[in-house]
Length: 242
Image (tube, rainbow, N blue to C red; front, side, top):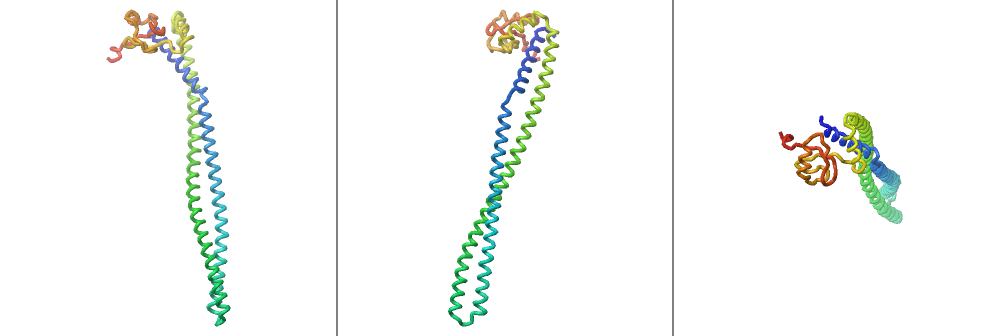
C-alpha cells in the first residue's frame, strides 16, 4: 500500500474519531428525552383528570338513579291509591292527581339529567381510552428512543477505541516526514488529506494546475492543492471505472 494511501487512511480515522466524539458529547438527546417525559407527564395529568371526572359523574348518576326510583315509587304509590282506595272522594282524587302530575314532571327533569350523564360518561370513556393509548405510545417511544441512544453512544465509544488504535498502527507505518507534513496541516484544518479526482480537489472543489496534477500521479510524493493547501491523493478515474 502506498504511503499516500496510508495518509488518506489516517485522515479517515481522525474523521471517524471526530464523528464518534460528537455522538458521545451530543446532549440534544437529553432534551428530547426530557421533552418526551414532560409530554408523558402532561398526558398522565389529563388522563387522571378524566378518570376523576368520570368517577364524579358516576357518583352523580348514582344519586340521580336513586331520585328516579324515589319519584317512580311515589307515582306508583299515588296511582295505586288513586285507582284502588280513593273511592269517590274528589278532594283526595284531585290531590292525588296533582301529586302524580308534579312527580311526573320532576321525574322527566331527572330522566333528562340521567340521559345527559350517560352521554357525558360515554364521551369521557372515549377520551380516557384515547389518552390511555397516547400514554402507552409516548412511554414506548421514550424507552425505544432511550435504548437506541444508549446503543448509539456505546457503539461510538467502541468505534472511538478502534480508530484510536488504528491511528497508532498507521503512525508506526508512515514515514516521519509524511507524518510531519500531515500534522503540520492538521493543526489548522481537520480535513487535510483529500482525493484529487478529474483534476478537482476534494477539499475546496477547485481545479488544480496541470503541474500539480502531473505531480500527483507520482503516488509517493506529497503534493498540495494550489488553492486550499490540502494534501492531495491522486484518484485514477479510468481505473476506477474499469
